[in-house]
Image 1 (cartoon, rainbow, N blue to C red):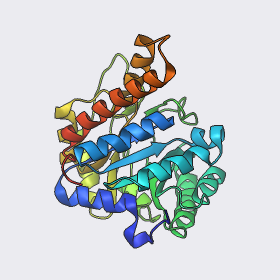
Image 2 (spheres, rainbow, N blue to C red):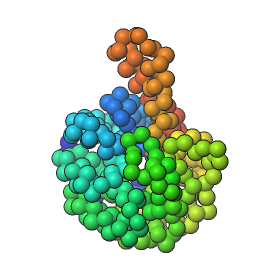
Image 3 (tube, one colour):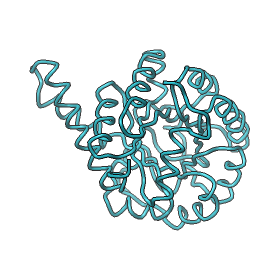
Image 4 (tube, rainbow, N blue to C red):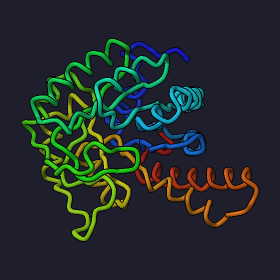
Length: 288
């Protein structure tokens, strides 16, 4: 399906409606066709918008094939579903991904492993490249601590919390989505547990929330109360990884030795049900 002009960008249309409606949309981190199908089926069942998220690993592993399959599934859905590339961490790969015909609706140009000035310079260049192809762009001011499967470049680097001033600098690059670091962590939170700075998130929202959509990373262990506080701070996109994929792994373990088709179908259904729960928690169910 042909990518629409930027004024009708699928990702931004979904998130702008979420902003206006006071809810958030789940961005599901998908590694295989089962999770992609589960996301689309959940969106259709819950009558919710959704975003399918791939990592650069999908391109490194399968070339354009998984991207094209994901785009077909997302863009053929009966409800709004967009395709987003998360944590694309080299300029070369951002450009390669943006050049896939009618593929991604949005790309996270994650240059957070560079020092701030270089991060800003590269982000501005890549935002222009994406916008020229009617693709929306996300960036990460500061640096969200930790790493996750399929994301390598920042795993060993110290987290740097985002300030409203930094957020302003990144908005000036032309980004459409901003992923603030306010105590959220990729992967495991460790012994200290979840310690989010909601005041920091609110100050960032007050500074730039009228111009960009705010994205929450590191949300896997969060409960309904935390999600509500983050949405009150302006978050409209919530990235979910293990909260979906662990259900598939559990089914694989429980059904070891069973026919592969039945394992795939059961795993897909388990992920779908988990996604639907997030849609109800985030308030996007019934909004499509």
